[in-house]
Figure 1 (cartoon, rainbow, N blue to C red):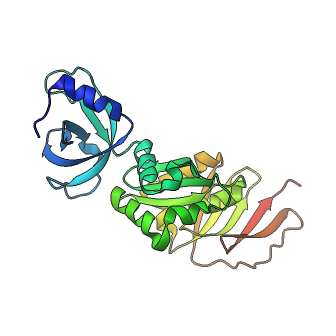
Figure 2 (tube, rainbow, N blue to C red; figure 1 turned 30 degrees about the vertical axis):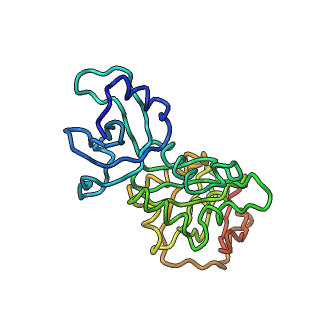
Figure 3 (cartoon, rainbow, N blue to C red; figure 1 turned 135 degrees about the horizontal axis):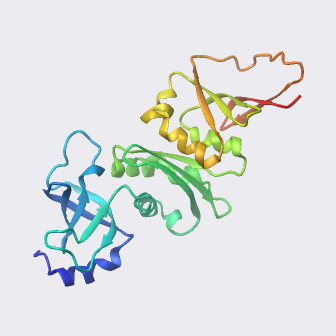
Length: 259
């Protein structure tokens, strides 16, 4: 189909701002990929492509229509597309999980490193709806579909709770904390296994920093191959110890208190 004139293109695509649209990579410019949207041509910033191999011409992808400009200078982009905006991921979740679109499950927050990893915090708004299992889907079908659509980005789902400690453990998943120490300084120190630590500390530990900012706590991770879950702390009453169970995983919680 022919590309319609600029004014008609603006009128057609303006209502799509903030919405998902599907298009195919058609060409490459200096800073943008040209994306064929059927009735117009969108521009997608090349910096958003994180894989080492270039996208294939003709490759179909979902995009968020970030902006549609009414008038542009010659050769300047008119339809700006993105996959980095958090709203892009929200719209994909709404597309693949009807319970989110219908308001039965709410997205509380998204902690995102676009193209790398996202932590999506979900909450049930209807009795009887288990948010995590619903979003994952039968046989993990829904989360697998979402993972394919945002590849190579990894999507981790976490259930919302007002309990800040439990929310931390939910956000750490699939990394399992073996021990949490809440220090007098206010810093939280978590001990994680060496095997799973890279999932938390990769990308310069940026996702852990995002979790820290969201919980408004300075969180520091310590790697340990093995920790004794039942170790006895000889502390002369200066430390309060609690063993909690989060997602059926025993976690030792140690809280330093003032003398």
